[in-house]
Length: 102
Image 1 (cartoon, rainbow, N blue to C red):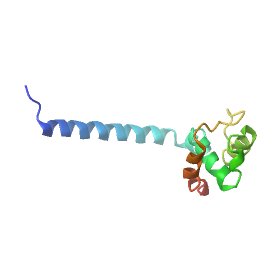
Image 2: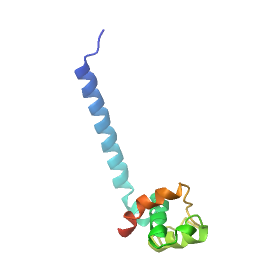
Image 3: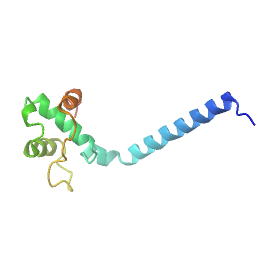
Image 4: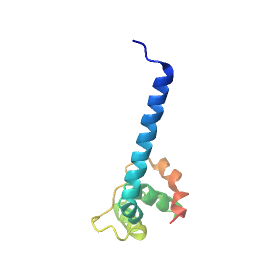
């Protein structure tokens, strides 16, 4: 029994659309926590901020990371220290433009 390429394409489109809607629903439900800085994007945003502020040499310094993360996400009550940046240093440059946004 052969499966028609048109059916396969339709099935793939339906699955991808369903996955997109599920991701959108999850993001919508977590929007307040995301806005407050609970997500792991805080490390990337913080790294971009550190580089933008000219503190690139302190990119991996935990005190600097914690200070910067507290500056834009002071309401994250569970964070008792820096959410560490564990990427290559050149990747931080990609997030500098994002650090200009609130």
